[in-house]
View 1 (cartoon, rainbow, N blue to C red):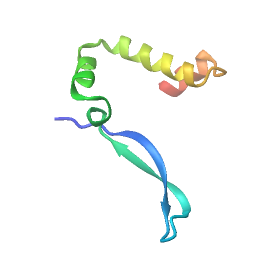
View 2 (tube, one colour):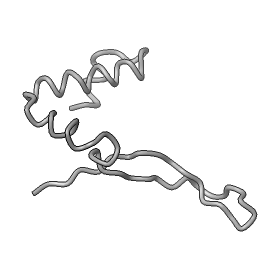
View 3 (cartoon, rainbow, N blue to C red):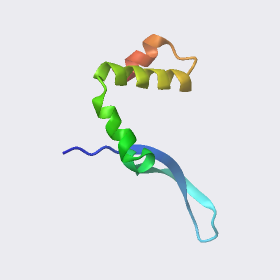
Length: 76
């Protein structure tokens, strides 16, 4: 049995006046809660190479100035 958690957001704690203070706190979620079970279970049929390519492309879109070598180094 496996369980996956993903980082969903960062939020600040608030005081009684509703003002944010301190460092942001990370909010975690399951992929199923965020995207639905069907979408997540569909990925189980992919080959690891396909998944790796999708992750690479997502990182490349979010960091267009990163080199291919740098992205591959981070992804391992």
